[in-house]
Amino acid sequence: METTVTVIDAPAGVQPRSFTIAVLPGDGIGPEVAREAIACLAILSDAHGFSLRFTDYPFGGAAIDAHGDPLPAATLDAARSVDAILMGAIGGPQWAGLAQTPEAGLLRLRKELGLFANLRPARMIAGMEHLSPLKAELVTGIDILVVRELTGGLYFGAHVLEDDHASDVCAYSRAEIERIAHVAFRAAQARSGRVTSVDKANVLASSKLWRRVVIEVAAGYPDVALDHLYVDAAAMELIKNPRRFDVILTENLFGDILSDELSVIPGSIGLLGSASTGSGGGGLYEPIHGSAPDIAGQDRANPAGMMESAAMMLEMLGEAAAAEELRQAVRDTLLDGIRTADLGGTARCSEFGEAVRRRLATQS
Image (cartoon, rainbow, N blue to C red; front, side):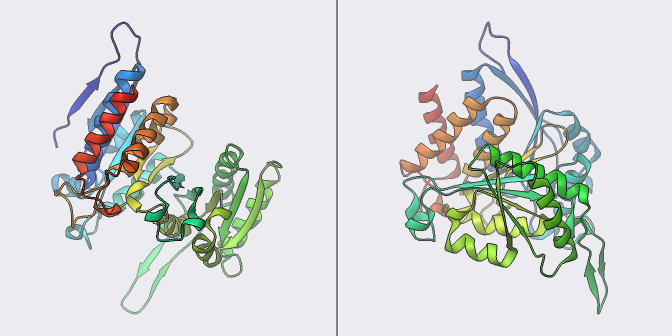
């Protein structure tokens, strides 16, 4: 597909801090939420004196349709060279069962870029506790970060599917566990100083190694408290007592499931963003929701999760003040009662985006 380049310039007379961003709009509601977040970034760049260059690249189902590959070579080459990647969402029923699915392209992108650490924060916005499916006294003040290992485990093991037999291999090396554990402990040092490592060490060999290595890594962080939960107990505790958690450290499959469970506690999966980072490069930033093909093209999606992902990207780029302005504008908009349908509101995706941008213009 033809790429579209947008250059957002810094104010006159200011030497801009310049960043290149690959945009992977993807499928379903992906292009809609990405468009709203990028428009917010335009206002922030003008106000804070940095320059952003966005280029769209085909990815996911849209890339299968156009190129026969969910991750075309040009997209992968660009992803390796930019300062950061913003992704909308991928997938849909029309690509299910293909030899190369949109999801396979995402797994390959993570592996090729070495994006082994997935960071998924979930915070309860004060004043919106009534939107949680849990009682307000359980969710008030929650601030949880899931640190999910992203390039190992069942998703990347050998898969065998036969008529009467199937298997999936879950494998982890000491080095893979060590590097993700360091990410979690460093994150906890900047937060409340607590890590809960989630495994299934009473059953799985890979979890036994996981727990052993995490304990060894913890010895290097005496200022961080470590405890362990089996994954089934952790799933229960997220509902019973979510405030017991600060940083949750876990492997790929468990992290996928637990972070989706956690996502509904603040009110909607549409509120949450994520960052996927590794040993090099700027990382990939995406909302944790899917492509929602049932509402695609209807201007009904919630772009707040994409905006949170953009804020996480700004932090990585060293633009923390701009990141906090974006988060504050989203919070103020939600607290003003401007909410999309997933939060019980009537605002369109574009209307929510416009309201956030009005806030940004006022703050700036």
